[in-house]
Length: 283
Ligand code: NAI
Image (tube, rainbow, N blue to C red; front, top):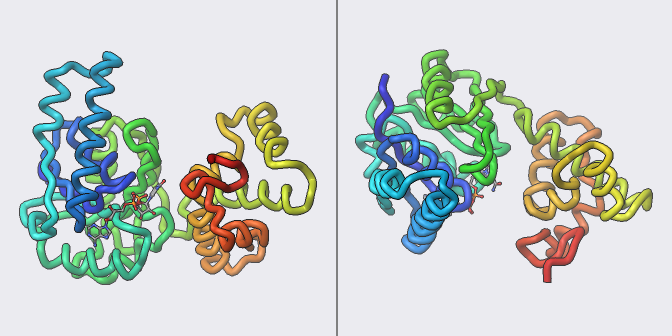
């Protein structure tokens, strides 16, 4: 199957980045959001990033115009009726994702692949609400999408080899590096990253070291570009807690229990950079 027409659902942080990389790779892309305002913001963000790429000499003016011309915005999900591939990047809620996938199953052509960018929800459960579970797959991009090379490709238990292969080929076409992952809580990325962040929070909670010192150890000692607590503040402490709960519940293992200090920060509304305060202050 040749994939030429793509829809990205959700024009937020991730969806806009995903739409941009598909357009840059020569595909026709429709960016969908239920809110016109979010759609406008997503499209103008893409335009700005492409213009910056031209300024930096990473693409020509002509390439930028061509990439932008391949993009269009819509608030109608029905416009996915001619799409070969749909990537869903709406809010991280199983209820919302299930209703989007049920509708997509009705709207899209029979051959279309339905992918989700979820960072923690089971792909197997999302696939099960459709009549084409073998054509459902996880395509987990990293933030910021135009910069980060990795795509975790997550196989639901029902995903066919043909679907996997088509998505692996597409990932390479986007000039990104695919990694094949089975559908277990946290996949690979968050299963390893989040317990490290949670452990860094325990280290502060138990008074072993200050947030600054924990981050310094990991930066200078382990050569991480950013300390785990700075990273947690960027990701959002509510998101970190949510993913730890997915791991804890999914594996039923106490090694994944969220740190009480993480819970306390979230209850206080100290969610990291987005709320102005987390382990660091951003006022
Ligand atoms: P966001 O909140 O920035 O964007 C979500 C967008 O979806 C919003 O514009 C909202 O209006 C729209 N939306 C909600 N319900 C919709 C519906 N039914 N139909 C159409 N549009 C709808 O969220 P973000 O950060 O872009 O995350 C999206 C997905 O990507 C989530 O599943 C998240 O777990 C995943 N993800 C997020 C990463 C991150 O670093 N933020 C990294 C990797 C995956």
